Length: 458
Image (tube, rainbow, N blue to C red; front, side):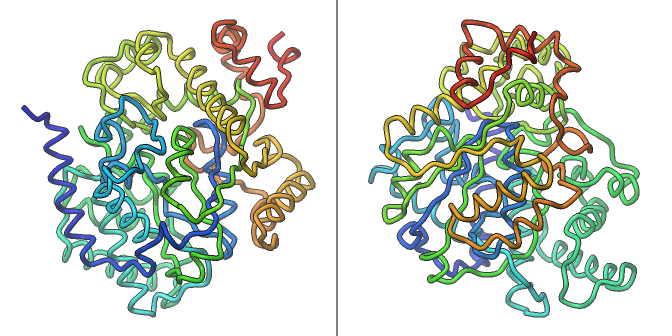
């Protein structure tokens, strides 16, 4: 008998199939056209969201609007639909026996890919694309809601009208994606009460001002997760051309892609695969992971009462028995009854060991960057993003301007504060034993990445 989650997923996928009929892919054969793939390889809570947000300021790079996990889920290539017990995908998963799944994956990627640049929503084709993209995005975020297309589009129009009248937006402009989304969600909640804006990556001040009746909910937004919360508030992006696909690097950001590197290389047969290995002090990453597991977001996989993780399952019994958070490394089954801080240490170690193993076995152009430099002093940020721009083969003006901004956005964060070093000291008693556990081997992995923690861990 099918579970409720399976039934919800199947119904949602049928609705998304219909939505895709209204969407346009300007380069439908994306796999064959892309000549350069750049994977930002990191652990979860390693800073990849902030880092990628800075890169998005360049008009010379291709991006998806969010992570690729929803594409994999819809294509049947994500856990549990892939038939694998974890997030791993190998070159064999890109073989002909998966042709139908690969075609669906290519379709979803081709419909979503875009690039940064000046946009004018007076262009009716661009506006129509944005509306259809919003429809798709809401469908993967709220798979249990059959969102009425006409109602959605009328509320999008009403939201723009309000922004023009009350917030002095000029016609065709899109200066503040956060404000647009909070107003749209407020309007949608009038009919669909279960849409909760707290599951979105939105500023707390906007949430309190425009949706005062909404509250934080530490349960999963659905029994079936297609896009993991915090949900992405998307922006309109330019269509790409075939020439763009052939000449611009395509950026992949999803942390769980570290378990899919051979697969990504295989599905883009004409592309050069490059890896930007983004590292972060394991103590800070583990601290962020612990916070995230206890946060009202980051639900990834429903394990149906299989979890008994001290520090998580006992604190949040409604979701803590069911919901695994973040990436699902091979061997996760051995960690379902381990203390939360050790699960987080395992997730950090597994991700970086996977990256290091791939680099040892494959001749790959790799640039290793420390997240501490990304959020370091202005001169350090300028230097590191100049280096990254040179490695990517792009001009550096836009991303350096974004990188040296005084306000680095806490994207996908569990706090409204900008990232800072050594926040983990508040949990030192919890995290220090994880760092020094010889069975986990975190210090040995950290040393390979250029981190010496002897002074910090005392």
